[in-house]
Image (cartoon, rainbow, N blue to C red; front, top):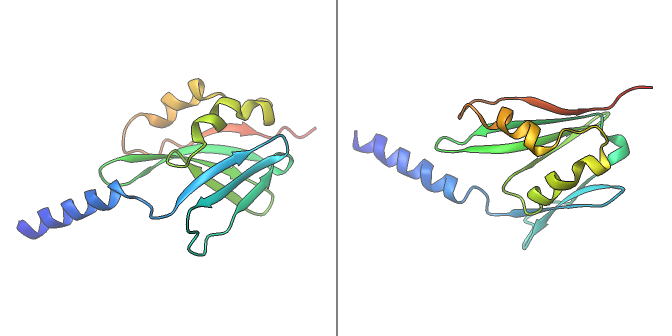
Length: 131
């Protein structure tokens, strides 16, 4: 029993400091980038152009004691995931519809993605319309 409690406490403490490297989301009218803050420890900047985004999904990752909201940008042959722990998350969510017309705003998708707790709740918030 004591070993089980130690494992649970260890997992909770790991989740408190989920990442040693913190990331920053930057965006402008051409695209979005994710950059490591501080010492990058081998992480490189990741960049996408808004014009290359085919679809955007939001979902949750179950991190044992808490959930982590994530957003995935699907591109032609790759993708980019960001999450709510990254600096710039809130600002991006306030402005994303300016760059991806037709993208659902956070007030529309958040309740669907956030509840129920500890479920993935995969929610599509943008799809490129082919003309």
